[in-house]
Length: 359
Image (cartoon, rainbow, N blue to C red; front, side):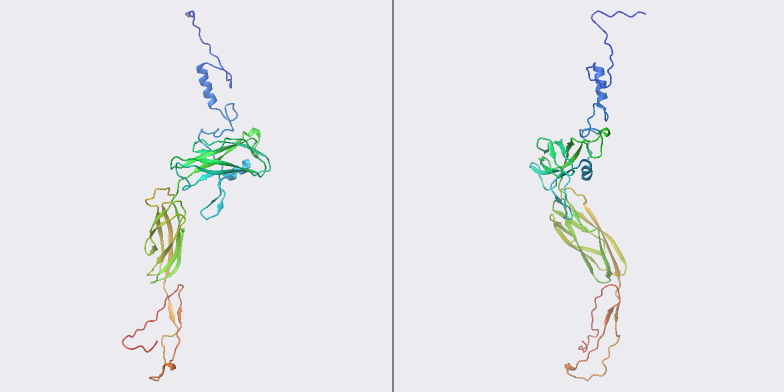
């Protein structure tokens, strides 16, 4: 069967194959296939940029190295203003952090990021602006740092809502990182975190309070402190099982304030007492609460008191009636505590139907 000859004015499009990596114009069908092929570029292929942030990840996915790893790999230390930790120790801040309670929506806040060369070689690097519009920096220019030198970069924060903000500043180095060669397809830059956090409500209490050995039928006390180490006022309320008691059982702590709490125990028998006290913090307060319920272990051992006297009978012998007071006779009795706990001793006169003769 013969094919019909082509009609005048109409020609059949010839299929044309393009070599890999060819970027010349191609028919629509081939162009779409080639674009798909370039979009799946792998390290080492023409369409893969190893120096760009997130090159091996999604466009918004970022892998953050900790400060120690960045310094070891790139020889550059990036720190923000110094801060004090919960124990009052001054620490270097990794990157930029606008802590909760230091900012409100609608304001403008600034911190300085210090970039320091901690190696013995010259460093040339350039930063990329954060992706979000809430953090801004000056127009990026190449930074040249001699060994031991540093440069400060102003980071401006303009929040519009009361929420957590997180971003990064990407630094690209012109030379290879320490310990890499060209064939290793090295990472030529690193990310420095830039964050703004909400105020947190939190308190700190001891993990346990051990009252040790306690005498029975007596009240033993031990004190400790509850401290507000958050950024907003902190209400608290204790809940503790018997026979332990905590006073005050509730209160309100201002930021940085501490209250002294007294733990009391009045055991009636010699036994081991163990309980867990819970403290609810921040009830009714709209804030981030890392630990809304704090728990603490209470322990004590009740012990009986054992008292001994040196004599069971005190005999003054024959005494002349009506003798002057200057001739009073005395006898000494030694009272000893043979137990492992303290003891309170009180001497009480038994006979009350006559005038006292002994004192």
